[in-house]
Image (tube, rainbow, N blue to C red; front, side):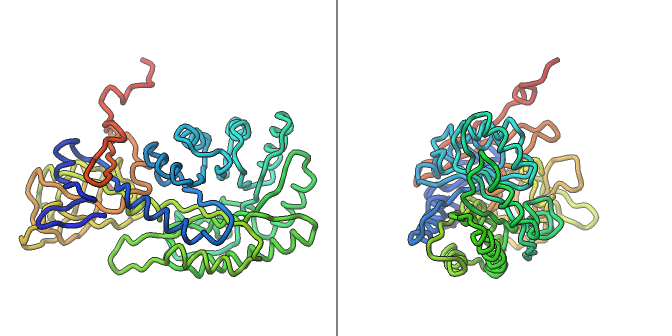
Length: 411
């Protein structure tokens, strides 16, 4: 939903330079239509099956964005009590909320049970014991699925691989059946499904299918032991196109392959995050200064690693585009931020036209894990966020102030 019209870059029907002038920079900007379209692609792919499309809230927990998805009928994949709270506040149906994560506290578990969420994705035997105990104290039954680690290693960054042997996530594959037999003996537990999630930013279907086939073997064995697995929770992980040469499978392609692995009567849960919000959000920044150092050309912007940590943390690539088209010759440039770290960069060795001081750049596809992972490092206030809907740009998060930096401190 970003395109040049003559010499100006637009998001939907709004000039990005106009957003910069009205709301300041740096700033996160989102396209509502892109969010809706991305979700509807999942919804259509799921149309012939019973189940849930649960947005992975960890990718972007902005209240306005969560509300868009809740209004579209999405469920929510949550990883903390705080995410459950946010989802309930914006109108998600609690019966569409699933709760994953290796370190759920007793307080978070009790809050989730009292909130009547759909189910827990349980990641250890001890967690099962705690859920059973708390559910007993509340005199209710807790719906659970076990997150099973299928020992599949997709081709993605090592930090976002979650389904291979030796990671902290899930029940080891070899202990899966034992986990279900243990749950069968628990008085306050109702087993409703099985869950697997192998990683993030995965650009091919094959690893998902390999994992699904391994999970199918567990399902068959569990059901031979007299238990019913109703829901197959396939997690998320489908990537987006960050670089022009990348090809990304569609939700329809992914789902049809996974559906074919399991029995026709199974219900499915998918937990997309990045593939719904990633290419719907962008970081708009201003060039503060230009300098040459050691034969390198630096563009110093007002967006730092505290605003967008993915390039520093994952060596992630985001395309960088001037918001004004120009025929000026392109030169190799390092786009960096103001943080007091050599690791504070947005893009290295990029071919960009010579850009003047106080001109604007758009760092694309930052909707996932951009604002959600932002911090106040170097005591930099959190950024404002804007949602564009057609011809209108609406502020959905105020820019934090210096006063906000000390809001909860006690002197």
